[in-house]
Image 1 (cartoon, helix red, strand yellow):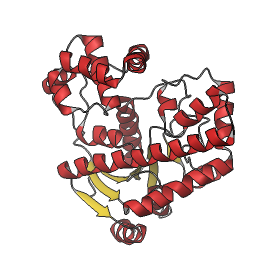
Image 2 (cartoon, helix red, strand yellow):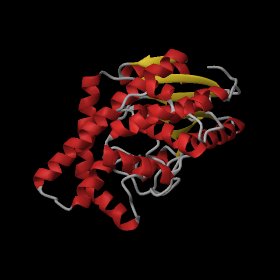
Image 3 (cartoon, one colour):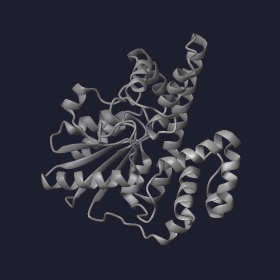
Image 4 (cartoon, rainbow, N blue to C red):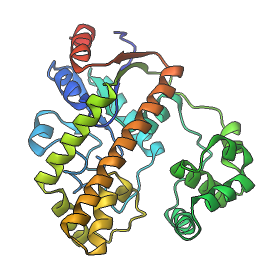
Length: 314
């Protein structure tokens, strides 16, 4: 491993086992952990995010967990700023950072930089776009995007809802297409780091089994009660980024409708399972894209990853 400010990136889809791998490395003594997960940043959202328990966090401290409330917004730009500050501090203390998680946008932003001339997320504008989608359908929102940013329309599909929202949001805030702003902004790559990228990509059948088991455990642990507590404590809105997290969106919708029959509960659980599988599918797609641009060590089994990581860093 290079001595030139090394940073270990350990990424993979949800429920792949990457956190356990990172904790094994932490045991070796000269590492610190930084979470790369857009759901773990929220306080009081523990069960549905599969957040490490208090005991696990005491044994394996993770940075960037429990840093904001579910009412707040945390962007990729903020992640890069916070992560680089932590990385520099760790290097100054002779530690090697391990960044572990499944939010590929955060990893991409760290590896490639972000367009600094883009505006921050605007909750009100996003809510207006989502309201239009609810009233007129996503085809109408997509058609609006194609009118104001034809290039983005060519790049995105109607199903790329988050990307469509972001592109329209930028246009509404700046009057300029996001594709034009991105083209004008040179990438700001943090060259002072040497990234060591590792991807854990289990077989999809195995991963789907792990996802199903994880959700079963979540329900048994009282995930619905956790969402009830969130509703009581916070003025939640389905459009909040925190409530767009898989599981939470489905549970919030179920509880707000008020019909808690066994049939409706099963329907909600099935929706949450489907949404989690779709998340994993998107994570695989992001990973393939990153692997095309960056050097990676890729593992298809946890055992393979354990052996190689021990050889590399043990």
